[in-house]
Length: 78
Image (cartoon, rainbow, N blue to C red; front, side, top):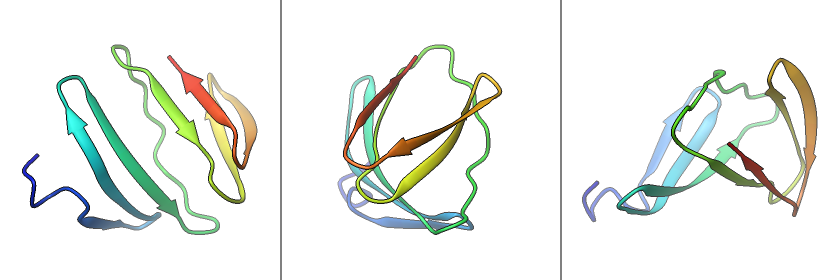
């Protein structure tokens, strides 16, 4: 990703995201999900995800189970 693409906002049907940083083996994004917005289900075999809900509550599906993630907590998924 070029320097021009860092901090550029990309819009999706569920909201938007900004790539804050990227390096060898990692990428940091800030996702802004509109209320009721739904992201597609994905499975990653070779990467971990670290999520922080900044405000509100996020409902996620993990291994076919639904969980509500509360704001200001760190969640690690592998």
